[in-house]
Image (cartoon, rainbow, N blue to C red; front, side, top):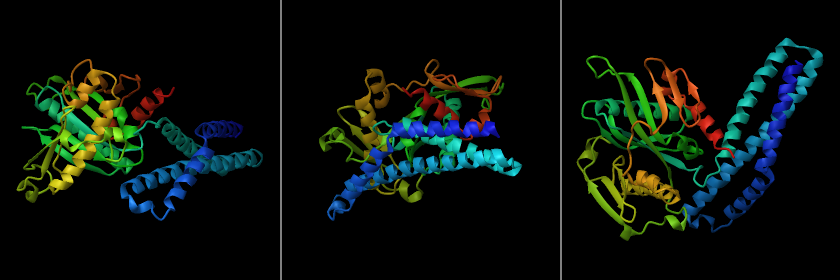
Length: 366
């Protein structure tokens, strides 16, 4: 029992250290200031700004209450474990052990969020998958990735919507754009940006030979037009094209010019949206996506990265991969940025990505 007590006290020390680092007092003061703004009768006159402030206050409250609850629960557990050292109750020891591992997991989740302090980390995200060279093989791999991210988001209870999709001629997809909503979605999913490589025995090859396929994953924050004057999009800088939508949305979508493609003339960045039923809805969604792409574009320091965001450099090929998924001749998924690997690729492809994302985010600390 003393070993468990020592573990509990060690976790309590980690929790207290991190609480001191995140400075809950300053966060509570920030909440108080935001609530004072929200109590102003004129607060809701600007609906967009009001929504942003309200969401900021809600996120801060969730963060503060999470740390406060964890701090209290570890104190209670520590007191009970010290009592149990005297009583030596087997059933209580099991309950305390189970509670310890539960709190350890909660601490790990809150610790990860302290890394998510980037400018857009709390935003929703737009995740786009592009099939690499290789025709049907690569297009099938792109669809496998789409399924993986759909499962991952379902497990997280993150609402997800298909914005745009281009189907392959025989199987799979050439590209798909997914809008994903939730708490710190962009902060988590930005770890997935890059080339993903698959090695397997091809189901499309008559000889069942081993093939290597590539797909590019791009993740951008989804921003409102009110986020920063530096992201203001002037109407003169936009080329707007309408065309008949295809695919998702039902027959009525396909009979009207509801699909929208926006081109930001100064940067050459293009965004298409066809999921919504009206041209106006597609235009609004496309503008939000364009805001996110522009945010990443202006933050990018290297011209190569800017070319990738513009869509001029989307080479999904050998040497560029961030992660490899090997199904044959052995089973392994390896992240080449962190060297973290797992040996159950079926589970990973079924949406179990948490460990890869957490290890990557931890590698960015400091």
